[in-house]
Amino acid sequence: MKILVAIDSSASSDAVVSEVAARPWPSGTVVRVLNVVESIVGYPGVSDIELLGHAETEAARALVKSAAERIGAQGIDAHWVVTEGYTRAAILDYARAWQADFVFLGSHGHSRLTQFFLGSVAKTILQSGPCSVEIVRATENYKSHSLGIKILLATDGSHYSEAAARSIANRPWPEGSKVKTISVVDSFESAGNLGFSAREVIDRIQEEKMRLCQDALSKAGNILLNAGLKAAGAVLTGDPRVRIIDEAKEWKADLVVLGTQGRSGFDRLVQGSVSEAVAIHVHCSVEVVRERVTQ
View 1 (cartoon, rainbow, N blue to C red):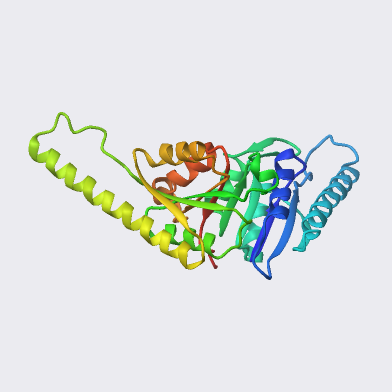
View 2 (cartoon, helix red, strand yellow):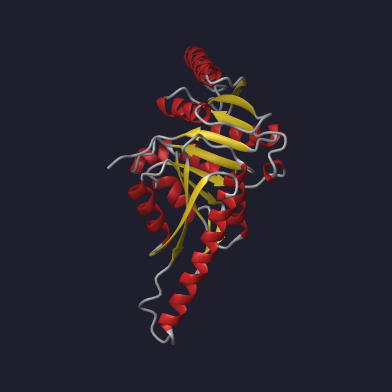
């Protein structure tokens, strides 16, 4: 597995490094810790521009070297790299060129000129990344994994949700980790003003949605069980974005995992809305699993 860890000097990025270092990984996993030094060429009136650029590059090297050493101390093959450019584009370009399987980054951070947070750099990587993305938010239990990790898998039974289940199944997890699978029936607001025939149609649609959700849980459960992971399952009703976020909070999940189609344009806005909404608003870390795009 090839994991790209994109960091800056923020506390959020420090949590990312701690998380990657604390978690077990498949044999042969390679980690690269990346920091982007934004280009300062073209800023008129700034004296000693070359000296400033050199100082920032040296600080970036020290940052990623230290992070790679922390991860490497846990027996993980870890390396560091500093590149220059526009932060969002540079992370995406590096992930594509290296053919990363995962990009890890924090939910908040900073660059030299602006603050970035989920909705800026992280949101861009989430939307446009060529591979899976984990946005780390450290819960209390995430600091040590002493009790394992509570993983909430949200599935709709699609090929993309099955890929998310396989992603969990194909990785080792700390001892004591628990998995819970949920599937959400997106219900109609109301059928109260409709005639009897219309309500019958809606009821049949809802029954079919319920069946599909139960099938989704069964598929995910079998994938996990074949990997030796037992998962409790539940069908919920309501807005999937709200129910996933609420269930994660109520169950005190450490990590929410979802699949995404990873499309662009209108399809991405519609199909990606659930994963993006959860990534933005959930209290804990979130993985959006995307099968790696080869170009």
